[in-house]
Image (cartoon, rainbow, N blue to C red; front, side, top):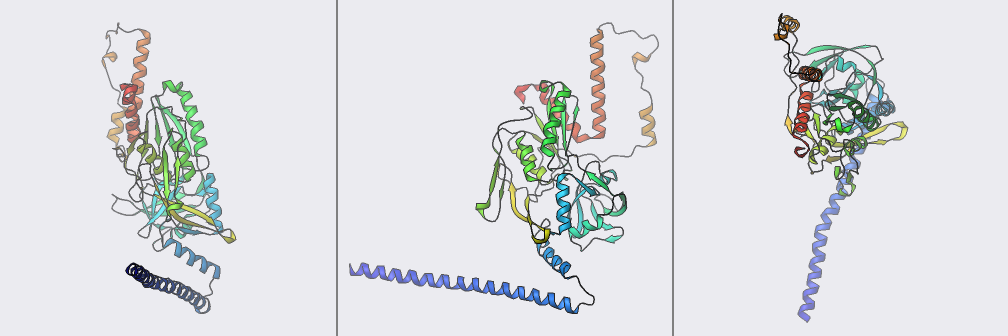
Length: 446
């Protein structure tokens, strides 16, 4: 018994000693860390005072502090930044769907401004700016060494004014200049149209209007075709869509899913993770879907494409997406400014992170570069074709009724329209061909 008591006491003493040996250094390290932080803050204060007192020119103290704050945030990742009161106001206006500018979504890579995507029907789109372009100069002034916000500020200006940007493009030997006239950018979040029996939903951005536009536009297009029974499928075109509001990405995904996880976010603290699930109801009523993506599809676009792909609700066609798999939280600050801080990564239903990897299509389809038409091509296309029916005295076809003849002519016109679409937009034509094939195989194949 005494041996047992002595052993227990010895164990207690050893445990206490071990706790002291482990906790002591940890507490010391924590104290040293705090001391180091305070020393660094004192160093910052010393530098600030010396700049204010001894710099060769008078400095604006508030601008100096803002620059220090922004430098701290931009050192974290390309998407964290400080928003001045004006920038914060501009961002709120842009989220509502109308703002002034060129019409491009940009990020920063290797010190240069990189185009994530041009926005449909904007000055940048009309000028031929492409996803993946690098902007090296604005009006002859280099953007190298500037923060992303500083470079964006250089590109802003009065509506109607001209800007010259210098572009470096992969596959082009030399940089080239592009002239763009600034304009008011009015974002139409969703454009719908019908292509034969296919409904094409072109989503250009995820702002407050995206889901309402999608819901109403889809219904109008279905009515135009003649009802859901006449629709063979839907194409959700997310190409060159730079993203936007997470809430809208969830709503658009939910529009085509009946159940299951849409996306999850995970921050540094596991308890801060969020999961977003679909609710009952599919606007497309189970009809087959194809999602189109490319290198300009980012953020919210990737959430939608990843969710529909993981649930096997849609076939994803195109090229690998941009790979922005992080979530930014905009936090209001005193003085009407704001801080945009990366707070989490998002994950598709299967648990994969898209960060830096992007969404890989089920079927990779490149968009062929548009080739300028030569004089010979133009002459050949304008040259009238001849057939048996054009020959003088040719026999009539007596085996067809008038209705059958009209149907053949309608089928021929549809085939010609499909051929023209392949010339205008090969990726979209490919997506529509997939839906035609699924429709021809019948419901069991879908």
